[in-house]
Image 1 (cartoon, rainbow, N blue to C red):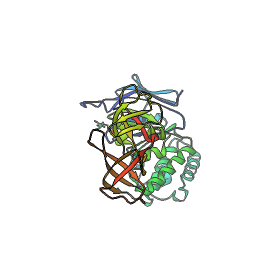
Image 2: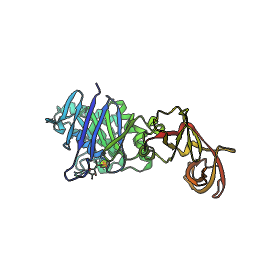
Image 3: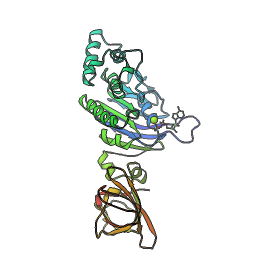
Length: 352
Ligand code: ADP
Ligand code: MG
């Protein structure tokens, strides 16, 4: 049996037209790191708050470690659920030292054990030398580690983190992604992390749950989700892509589109004849004598690569605008005619 089971979890706020969270269903294994990913307002925080017990669900069931913590007849209060919470703004007590901040969550522990556990957890997050400092004397990344240490100190069953990286600047953000996952892995902690950032989600999690308008769109490991997005929303939310429709060939391995025939990585299980393809820009490779060609409309330089907007002539005499990535060392000018191939492994059939 999965360690956490969430069944048909729904939250309908009073007077709202649609549920904020609609029949959310997920099983999570012990030690797994899950991210809830989706645009602002899609119901991530509400889901997390219901799991924590801060928000009453309208319906549904939550089971943690084989124990029902919420259903139609019963709701365990937050402090009894064995959950550690890390808030977006860290919510450290400004008037308490780092050591006291961590001890706060261990109020019921005996003094000696409390001291030992605090030392142990400070060591784990690499902050032993800062025990006597106050939160404002630490950097953003250090404060975040304190918040995580405080959540982990009472040995919770699960840690919930709401947008833990959003207050950090780019460089520190990458470092903290790495550090936070390291600490969670070392302690074999089950974690649910909320983020609206696809890079955060891919970097830290075993599985990603993409949500839109309160509804789960897809649950998959990062690589699988990027390679096989289930629908147009997921494909577009995970990065730039070209959505092009066409007719499936009889062999189920090719699609006839108006820019030409496109190869699929394997036989599709799509059961409709007309399908939509998601073609990733990095799968379109500029080569001499490529199968497809078009005129460069715009070049955007990003440092790591350049993004080309290319007008591809269609077989019915129109133009389809596509996005391609090209290596930065390649000199490309607006107006230039380029030819390219499409790597099948970066093509996916997606639902509308
Ligand atoms: P996210 O964390 O993905 O940005 P939220 O879970 O905060 O989204 O919000 C989901 C939806 O529920 C939004 O439309 C939001 O306006 C609504 N909502 C959140 N909290 C409340 C509340 N306490 N009362 C009414 N509506 C709320
Ligand atoms: Mg939120």
